[in-house]
Image (tube, rainbow, N blue to C red; front, side, top):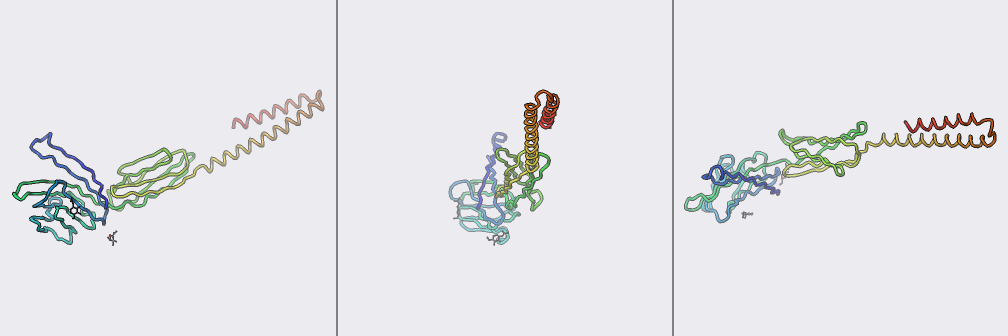
Length: 260
Ligand SMILES: *[C@@H]1O[C@H](CO)[C@@H](O)[C@H](O)[C@H]1NC(C)=O
Ligand SMILES: *[C@@H]1O[C@H](CO)[C@@H](O)[C@H](O)[C@H]1NC(C)=O
């Protein structure tokens, strides 16, 4: 059972001094689980009535239970301490539940409101990626089971993180390849998917080609240089000019390569 509660305090006391402070609890449960809705006010209870969306469900008075709805249909029962128990909850059980507690002398002891929300567990998200030029485009998607169903989606990569609330998809564009993780949550469950996406294939090829090209140019340059030096030694006087031209050619080739 998942009892995640968010207490939302609607205190109207400041605006209307005559109005009692009313507290609304938010209570989320996953479909098919069972739920216990308890009474926050302490002490014994004599007369308790549970109401869902203004429709009376049942009443516990002087230890006797009276149903106002079909018992099978509501799958509910009440404990002697006033706690309402709902079995195998369905989406339709969602609503505002109000409990009123009276003392034996008829004095109102407590009135509490609970927003009860039944959610489907999150479906498995789908993480996909596309390599575009030098960027990675990562997409995390969740298929809705029902309309209006939204999730909190979180896509992370190393230190970067992108979060989107009330969404069914989230896209992330980055220049870096690597491991991506997508986490999808609602109030009752979360699912995760991880994928390593590598878009550097093309980049690596360019790098290899340019290194190979550099090596080739360097080798040619060295051969020409050695050739020049040897020739220079042999024919120091006559062929100086020719060799200089050759040297120039070498430097030109090198410059062209470096500039590319
Ligand atoms: C709900 O739970 C019952 C057992 O507690 C199980 O038999 C049934 O298959 C479940 N239904 C769904 C839709 O998960
Ligand atoms: C009320 O009683 C039920 C069953 O005995 C128990 O599970 C639940 O925890 C009780 N709740 C409170 C608030 O005491």
